[in-house]
Image (cartoon, rainbow over all chains, first blue to last red; front, side, top):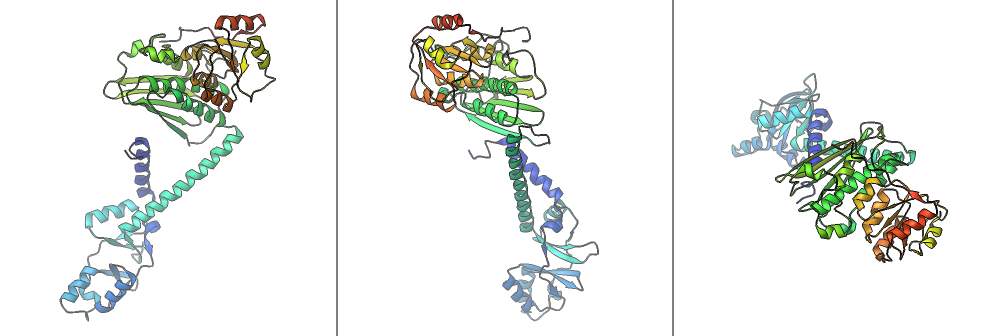
Length: 325
Length: 123
């Protein structure tokens, strides 16, 4: 399984971002400026030589900045087959040319590419003067460059987080921090490692000791459930933003037979062996419920179990195990 | 009470080196099942337990316990001691049982750091 396949929400984010960029970027940002052009009376022989030297497979033909046609490698081949290398490009060029404007969104160019099946589009400005050329390669490169700039921003926001660690303040914009842990089945030796790391991260981010402790307890219980009760282990995903800590534990089975019973304090299906390790008190879900503000448990034999827990940062409940003495 | 005083009181060995010698311990909690511990333990409690497993250290960390006493002379594994050392969680092994340890601490005015368990807000 590839790394991406195991992170479905990450893939979703990326797709959305590319789609967004297609709408955000204008053609002028990704096109090749000052493209090679041919005059009306350039000979086919000269055109072929230029195309070979510059490694382009087509170029616009202009008169006084105004686009009159496009000559491609196929047109040149056609002329050579006719034995007419001495003819001018205007005799063999395509005159009905698909174009885009420099102020168009990239998505418009993509539509034109798909509708016309051409490999390159001349780009015109608002006065219909030729200002650039656009290939599908230009679009891909432009998107990649924009994604890279995005990644730069992420780097900078990481820096912001590390500053916040020192400032002891929780983030106050729309950014969020996501922590992700894989939990292995039956890995009692490392059980509680992820939840302790999460607790530490929350403290570094400036959460109060009480919030960090309660989130820690909730995630610890969820982590132990993944170790004890799953077929193949599971995942913990913790998202921190300025208002809340959203915690999620999910696995692919076997699912909980009777959710109501599972929620009853003292009820446990843990084996005797597990109990000798100090687990199976039947208090896990009860503890989680007492530590968080919202708890949603979904489970079925087909999809496994999905536990959502939310702790709001501005709420300090007086009940539950996290209560200070 | 200070950690070294508690160790002496329960005839225990302090197995970790890096701890706050001046920390004043005021309360304790006894439990063998980790979820039971997490359900009602208060912060800064001494966790007294018969369970000898690295989970005890992680539970103590999650619950902000001040130290851990392993009862009945059980010898923690080197991994468990290492974990406690790295996380600066004082770890004591005592030859006494849970009741004896608790009684001795209670005599020295160490109080219960256990919340009453409240089922009322449970669905």
